[in-house]
Image (cartoon, rainbow, N blue to C red):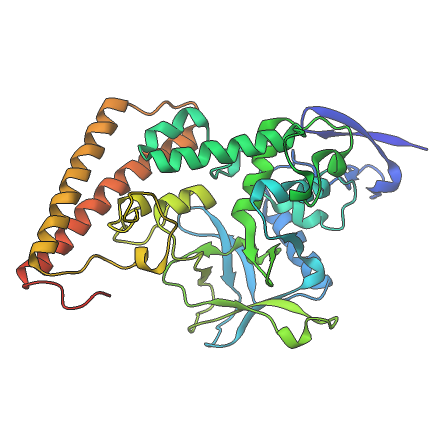
Length: 389
């Protein structure tokens, strides 16, 4: 049997020629190990290959992959689309499905595909970002986390990364029943470093969408749609056809979209601390909202931090004395945050993208407090809030 060498990170593996697409004499051999984590960030050729793969397997698309004004890869329409019209439809058999668990607990499922030569998801896996191209709470450098200045968020990130490390080293303290697969079940005796596992967990974190009850999905092409809090586009599937061969996940236009416009979706009503943790970027919408822990209902009556609820999404409202008290609270909070960021000093540039994200978080946090103070002052001038929105 004839073999060729294929690199998978720093390791070298022998890949049988049966896993190689043979081309014309003199052309480069194209290794079928498309799931390799060391592949380059997808260029137009890779994007076209991904679109061809999904269409050959039953997908219907009215989009192409391009880059927006910020240079971020996204989806753009190939034609005018009316409100209520399908933008794309991806069959379930092209979707990677997970049990609804934390990203760390389901990451071994993706890890298995990434380390499987000739994975049937090859063209999709090749489109995923490389290690230095994705951030989330699972892999943001821990030496930068304190510069966020939010103890609750720092603790959450620390806990997530410790969980990743424990699963990566197959810690016996981890209950294997929590996992769909253990790391050895996913990749055999291949040594997976903690950093590599954190990266894979971050890919899961940033690429999954809520699916049927108890499941989350990685949906090729659809997962390239960028976030817009105001987007009216929505995902759907036909629950009556769940057990039929033609079942698919569909993206539907919530408003008219002109040809060539970017197709976006809302990632949820998340504030910037949650956006950073889950997706590794901040909401570009203006004005910025208070982060969860700065909100007036971030803690319960006993002072304990609470999970995000509908109540925490609503702005403060009340009579004039209540509004004045909230303005005082926010002014104190702004002063404390400014003082803390000054004392912490310059953010280390050990990871430039992460450092830029942390600095943006600091700036937006301070600005969100100022914006809220100005809103409350306007309510005070009007004699109090008209209603709690």
